[in-house]
Length: 211
Ligand code: SAM
Image 1 (cartoon, rainbow, N blue to C red):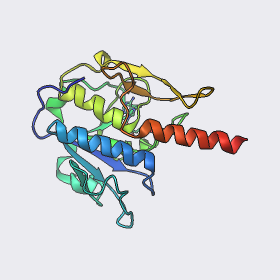
Image 2 (cartoon, protein in one colour):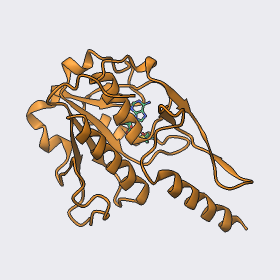
Image 3 (cartoon, helix red, strand yellow):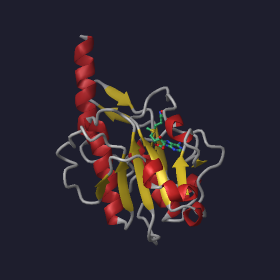
Image 4 (cartoon, rainbow, N blue to C red):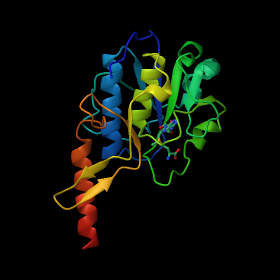
């Protein structure tokens, strides 16, 4: 789904909450950077440890701004303009939130099943929170949906989704993803470039370990 009428000045911040930056996260961050770049939005990857060497696919990536400081230091004076996308928030994100907030904050956390609520690390900081519906999304999906809602002005329950899609690993095996994705024009879940190959590789490794 195309983003329409981008509002100038929206910033999407992913606060990196893991000590490492694994291959899965690097593909997600690269997808967020290129989509934000293409739709006139800013993407900031915050709280990146100084000791962390960025994976090659992120070095010099268009649309990626890296910050070692955390959200509280960067936007100390604009706290009321920050909206935390929080699976436990009591209110869903609405297109009008695009008028109320300038900065949309996400947890840079790998999805887990069952969810461990690591978004609570950001909730504790006291930002206003909004939910993107009841199903856990990957971080890049959460950013994509937020852009569609606040830039495309489409209500969150009208975005086309695919929940828990099955990915074929080989002729005999498939794996079910425990997340909600945006449905692409080809009817398939929108995922970062390279993600399907990575999932297949990781699943094959997992199967090998079981043998
Ligand atoms: N299992 C997780 C946890 O520990 O909180 C969810 C992490 S999710 C993979 C990464 C980020 O995407 C979350 O921190 C949140 O900002 C955003 N997110 C994912 N699904 C969401 C939803 N349904 N509503 C609001 N935000 C969501």
